[in-house]
Image (tube, rainbow, N blue to C red; front, side, top):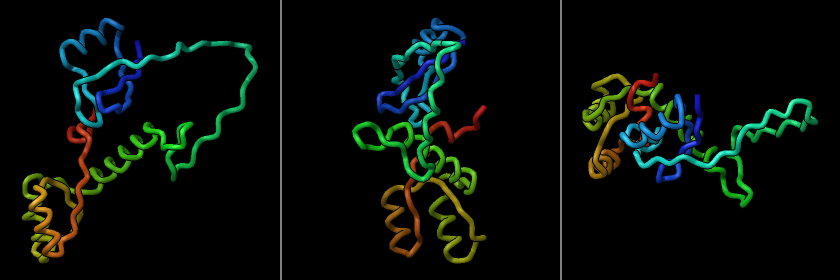
Amino acid sequence: MKVFDLACDQDHRFEGWFASADDYDGQLARGLLECPMCASRSVRKLPTAPHLNLSGAAERPAPVAPSASAPARSSGGAPDPRAVQAMIMKVARALVANTEDVGERFVDEARRIHHGEAPERGIRGTASPEQARELADEGIEVFSFPLPAALKEPLQ
């Protein structure tokens, strides 16, 4: 089993597990690899250092884990992109788990809930920017949060 660090053209980083290096090359050539964040099929393998098992080597102290409430910082002081991506995925999973997908009926269902014609609950779906403005003008709170493609279908 080969585990490769991958990234898309938007620099979203993720792992891919393959039977062999040839399996990776074949899947890439057939367009089967896709970024779980943005669904881009422009994927590349990142350079990785080999794992060295240095048994008997002096033990180093374990690194201190960053605070769960703040993203890790890179050496330049900016948030670590991997930590930010992990936080975005955590929020996206929570939204999917705690809302009902009403799809194209979002605008109508939001109005029905607002007017008391449907039970109050969290919903998600699609609306154009113009429809979102109309809902806001009516006093219906909505916000846009694009879901990563990986969360739009059941995960294996």
